[in-house]
Image (cartoon, rainbow, N blue to C red; front, side, top):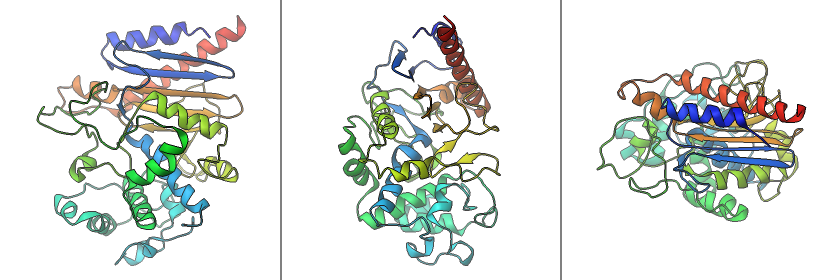
Length: 349
């Protein structure tokens, strides 16, 4: 598999300082190519940001449902005290599909001091954007609540739940819920200018305040481990969950809204552009705000993992005062289109 345009584009992005680190894996049919920047290998840590929503949280939620520990129609008032009336009947399914009406708000230090229960209470104290189940808005806070629900039903921290139920069964070797500031073989992905006295590499503002990653994502992972997960999904490995749940997880539950969503997954539809021409409607995956993504198409036996620190460099270009996430969205589209061109060119050749 020759990828001349893709290689050229990645080199240009390094030269123009759109990022300084990347790992890109392209798997198509029986062929596979991996491309690395000079400072990266398959075990290099990247902050996966919201990719953790599916690599960790939604997968664990579906596992819990598969085991009979939880239901898609389980509601917030089954797990939390003093839930406001308009939020009591919000379901796990609505949280997974971002149709709960709960929106992202900054978590306060005061709430953090009260622990997970107080953080949940504070998040649920804000007004809903719409009546649950009637619209779509992407919700990090909804996934934080899902992480807390998992901790309640398993009676252990989310990291331990993940290690027992996903990492160990799949042979994942290098996914961490936090790493130190001086962690070797790791890419700097946070988008702010930070003091070297900082002890952890958290990018997301709410994760920084909480001092820990959560159901919303922000963990550190590498190409090797993400590939392990995707291979398990493609083969419908029951170490993840029962075969019937793969189709249910990958179904588009929000076709009439602004973005296609499965049970955690982002589902490609005619409105979605970041996968370019490469991934047809019905493909699925997720993005990470720090510059990451993975997408899968079962029919073509096609998947692409894209790891970069593009958001940091978008911020760095503006002296860490602002950045435009639309630039990262466009970058994903460019890279996917370059891969698409190369694959089609190879087929014609």
